[in-house]
Image (tube, rainbow, N blue to C red; front, side, top):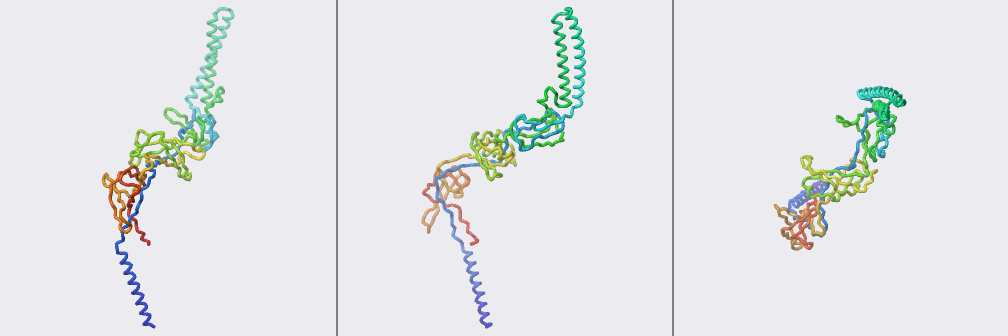
Length: 369
């Protein structure tokens, strides 16, 4: 029994050894080279480029206060719709001490002048009643009195504006009420109740109370490389894709190409803008990243083959035509004249017809088999 067991083991080892030898022998043998083959077809080819950019409103306005003060009320928040002239916030005035002193001094001076004008008018009127002065002189005194009264009213208004930000005569146009200058959607309100705000002047840009934009008038803004900008023309159609909205697509029209390049990561690029068409303003948000596809060149109903079948040699291009039978194939190298390419297929202007068969790249063996 032991003798048979040893014999079985020996036979098994021999089989494994022979099988391994045969397997390695087959693996070491050169495999025949097999190529992909393509038949030229008549198709349309579009040479396109993709521009990366973002969606933004054409007009984005920063609403700033007309006076310095403290925010006491906010009547709107980001995302709300506003109409031109609608109140967004209210400001409590912090008067400038220099302006306040000047306004108070003006009120006092106007009061003194009015008092003197009244005395002069009373005296002149008594003489006029006795017909001792002419009508012309009396009218001048009357005019001086009216001017003094108007100056008192103006001085009081100026004092109220400096002290309170509003006067009785212009209460409806109060500068303490911050109003939207356009109709649209509030994109941002960067202030809170209690924040100090300052008006815009020569030395200060002023505090932004709110940013408002018309979200029904959007543009695409992006940059294109200098090697492709020469093919662009204003009015060219573009297809915009927003990946954040499940690849939402819509149309746009190129309307601006910057005349000056900007350097971006070592490459010269030109800014472009496109007017976006038929977009629901409630769905698109300002600042969405987007891609714009634009057709730089196109060829209609041309003979084309996969670009991988082309052999480039210096300034010439070649293809290999399949000749012979299935059992005895040969490949003939012929020059061709190419046209535009979309990155996958390339136009063949001369050298190949739709009746030919073209050799492609070598097939890659599947090592898992």
